[in-house]
Length: 480
Image (cartoon, rainbow, N blue to C red):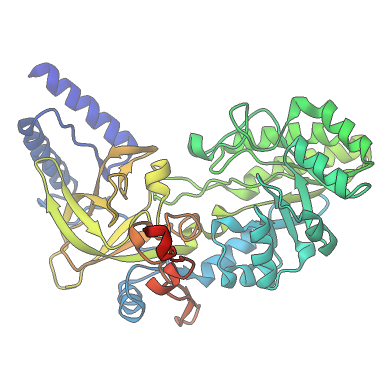
């Protein structure tokens, strides 16, 4: 038993490192689980002196308050996404202040959250667009974004890409074959080149898009072949693009900026260096966010040094997505069931991977805040595993950090069926990246919160008829 308790102690050291609101309970035996549950309750009590009472480790609401949450749920139902216009504007202002030597263009990576209302807002604030597909180009233009303000970097070059070029869209070739196709149709045209600089960084391996294990961009050692295709089609390389991952390390990002300037040296017509995005955003309160002024200052100096050396004053482009919208959005849902086993107490939401896929995919962490339906109920802390409504064991809102397959408990306000739950940090890669219509659940509506407190519906809840509208019946003869 002494050896087992030693293992338990090690687990508590790990849990403490991850953050006090996490508790990974071992499953060696029911008896040990019971011992650990009692031990965990003692830890909660030690934090504030009263067993089961309020703990300082719980997450809190960001731009919302309980009244707005209840009003939203009553007016639009649950689950519903909500975005805060004031936070979106503040994030855009911060990005537009990124240090630069000879001019800056901020391109919103629209895949983070592609709702037209958000695109229109950012367009009005002077942001341009980074598109990842031909469909995103069309979506941005329908939202009023000028084609000349859109740049395409895509794993799949649209078959009609030349029509976008004619409209003024900027194309970045992301592979040798894309470059060859561009040259065949747009001989003598202007092109950008997205390179894989040989290193990458990301919040998880799944968000790292640089280095030898990534298919994104032209591998930097293929430079001679790139030059051959450029010369063959008399192309004008006017832009070099690099992007190493989402949630990337600032030190690695700055190193890649230096490597990117070396690539610029190889193409004398380059006017713009696009360093992508991937700036870390702290969703959980123990997580740190990137200081754009801090990481941008050395990059500005590198551009100035490059200009002194070569006489070339490069325009800087950046492509933030998560940075602009992550903490400007939240998902409001409801606890629709509650159940316990010998190991855990589970809260089942009326939302899940159909709205917030990141935890199931990356082991990503989102702040969870319980809003009791009875505000007079005593405020107590409890530990829960929070799961979604899908018939899928991986529909988990509280995985261990970075471990999508590991169940982890989270310290929350004691919850009951019918209470509301706010999933904070849901502005990026949630509405735009989820398992839409899995189990035939409809797409959730989206709402914008204006500075004066007004709520504006910016996407309706999908109906079953809309989900089924493209399905066709087989002829009777085929069923015989």
